[in-house]
Amino acid sequence: MMKKQQGFTLIELVVVIIILGILSVVAAPKFINLQKDARSATLHGLKGSLEGANALVFSKAAIAGLDTNPGTTVDIGSANPPAIRYGYLQSDIGSLQEAMDIDLAIAGTGIDSEWQYVQLTHKVGADTVRIHQKGAPDNGGECYLEYTPAQTLGGQPLIEVKDKDC
Image (cartoon, rainbow, N blue to C red; front, side, top):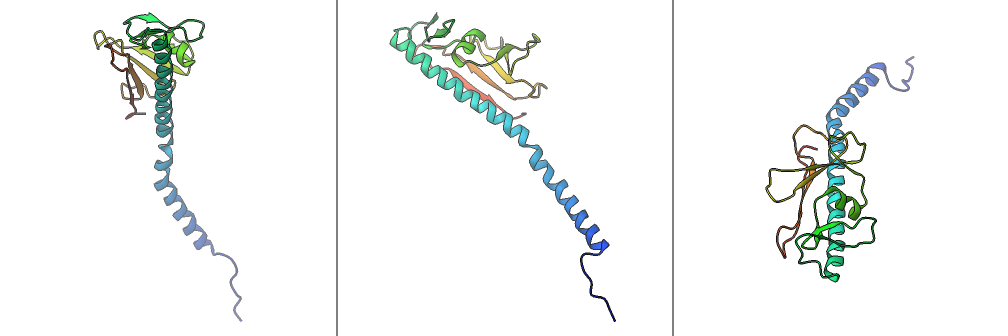
């Protein structure tokens, strides 16, 4: 008389574990890429914040008649009025902090902040800055937001997210 088998045999259990292991190795890279997506989304959020702050600052400057001035400040109700050029935010650290209310420090100073600020000098007269997130890859790749203030009357500031290497 043969006994009726109940449950799984040891071989069946081992085969299932091996298949699950292979599937997890194949699927793991999909989940590892989540950090890149998160950094990219954060940079795009910062871009939206900067665009919004610039729109509000430009509105205040236009109301005050300062939108044609190549270099002044505008009162936005903050402790220190941000510097503007043709109505839009200048790229100095103080103006960006006041208008956006973000934790920003100059890169390489050892000050602990969520965002790091780097003034670029290779674009003559453009006052371009790069802002990158603390902990982002710092290997010379692209994982930052680049901001260039308005250069001419009627011109717009240039805000670009470079997230290829996040």
